[in-house]
Amino acid sequence: MSSRTTDPHPATDAVPSPQARTHEVITRYYAAFNNSDPAGMLELLSDDVQHDINQGGTELGKGAFQAFLAHMDAHYREEARDVTVMVSADGVRAAAEFVIHGEYLKTDADLPAARGQSYALPVGAFFEVYDGQIARVSNYYNLHDWTRQVGG
Image (cartoon, rainbow, N blue to C red; front, side, top):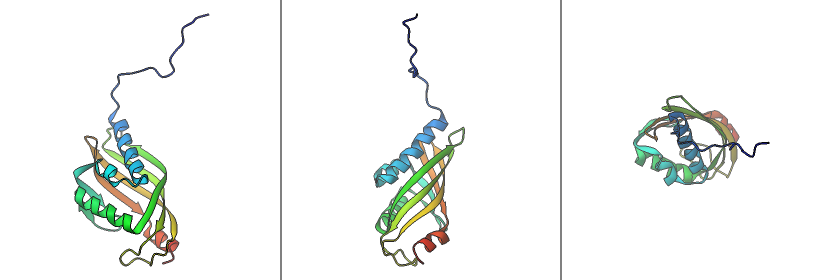
């Protein structure tokens, strides 16, 4: 009988693949989102990040993204649940699918009146990542479904 044991998790000096590095970045992005940590989200973005807003325009830069996050925090309390992250082999493109669970806190522009309504909405998000920083974020969800859920 041998007294040798095999380590089930041998230490390696292997560098993570581009795919694994991007998966880590996107996972950290949603962890920061769920922890109401806008600074943590912003540190993962490139300075010239492109943000494609669902059924809206495109904004450029961290400053615009920071303003968007502040606006969202004033009107909504949200958590991304059941997050699945998928990444291309080269690590440049990624996608996330999740369900956003939220509470509508304050009436937003021309949307229905806020009365603390709860909602759960499937979301798809798409990313481009270069040198470990998110260069593009595009979010998509069904605004009609959200409007129905909050009673609009």
